Image 1 (tube, rainbow, N blue to C red):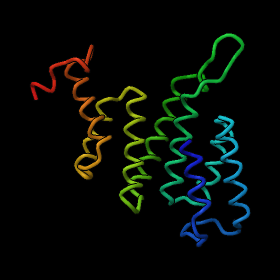
Image 2: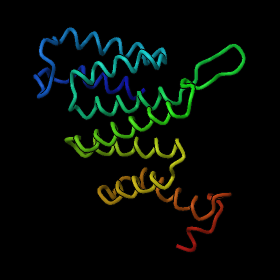
Image 3: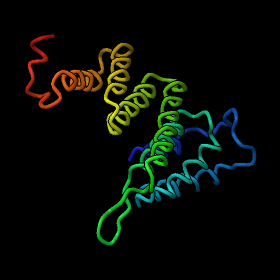
Image 4: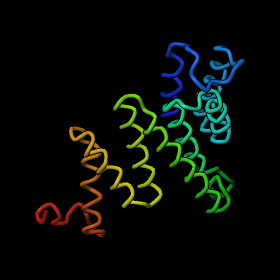
Length: 185
């Protein structure tokens, strides 16, 4: 869904040649890439989504929204399952391949946050990075990301609540929602 939203936002953006943009790419070519990207994402075809978003990344290498979409596509590709006759299996055969894709996703999301021109873009990239860290089991790294968001944007409730939850989880891993963490703070 994030990829569809990014593609829609990029389609509605004015067409000014961006620095580093590939020469010879017309607006029609970009529209074709966006349409193909949205269609692949709607089908949940992670291989095609990855191919189209990487092509978009070659056209707009310094666009923070494209970097975030690329990171999301890499993380989806790494963990999404393919159906089989009996049991679904992960899209990648080995954990080394999965780790490489997730490493690339983390780098792209971090780059997206660094290049974001507005605080909202920075927040979206950092929040998605925190979610990725949580999903792959790096709760400590996710807590660091959420705490950094709290420092820069203290009025955002989502990251503050996630940070609180993770701190409670570290205090009482078995039942963090019933712990006395909040009383001992």
